[in-house]
Image (cartoon, rainbow, N blue to C red; front, side, top):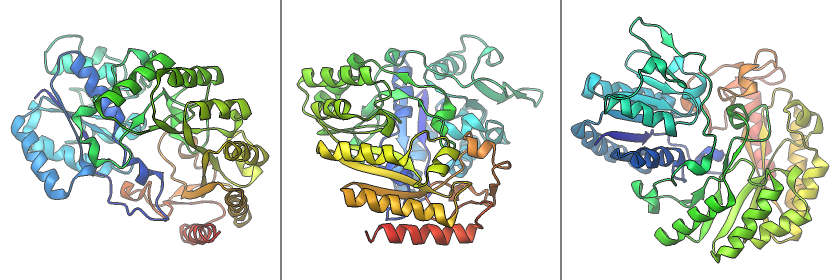
Length: 436
């Protein structure tokens, strides 16, 4: 085996009324790793992929022993903030068992935005900054086949050189310019039957928005797959897996209306009988767009609303208004779509009053017939709220990354709330909206 790719274990979060979207995402396959694997296979590499979140600790030990016995040349780990501690611990175990014969590569949001943190002793040997499909092939060529340019000549990576210096610290985030050039994710590498939401499709990367709390906007502008390429993947999913429902995981599926119409027409013309769910922005919604979504058999949409206060909406650069939110929700409901709106508590300018505005907005949406969910803000690395936290009056009090992402307790305090106060206010808000 040449290469093993791993989705490290996240803390074992409980799935309940307080759980964040991260819990739901763990019930989906890690498409990023499957894209990288498919591209490596395209160039003749033998790849295995493991999602440790599917297994018990005993099963993980058995899988790990198998990996170490096979002694791959590269082990890649997808590192986000909540699974960072586990990734670090596991990389140390890799080095203990395989030594310098195996290179550990970190990729993902956390690694891309905090590469230096990932390059300590016995941690990552190389960090990929940005989208990893093409650079991973170049690294495999060098490490496994000893061909191609030296590490010092490659863009989009960081590592500690022989002089103990951080190399490529300021390298730009890599982007795949034409997503249609990528092979479809190799879903055969994971047990799809173990996921609650196995049929996920990525129609675009990046985001049109620049919300303060979101790393997708920090990743860069949006890149779009063609309607023809998306439909070709859908046909493969029907042929190989016979899924019934497809969840598009784009941040804004309808970012380009003309393209959305083309996707809907292409799906309808294909004869595929999937149902679809997707996420979009209320600013993209009108009657004609929703009619097209219905035409392609969309049954549910999600809107990131984030707050029920128009001033906080401006503060977080959401660029929408509550009137627009209610109008979009009504339009979708009138066309028979299920609607989920997500909200966040803990914005730097949140007060007791603005949080109550959020509760009131949720009350209105639920009475209209929509659904809503509240999450606690997490100031993820790379986001504006993380980078500009001092000027926003946000102070991080808990740097244990195990506590970031799917918890009722904030890891920070704001100018208006201590950690304890914000935690209490969050629980009160969740309990109130769940009685509506």
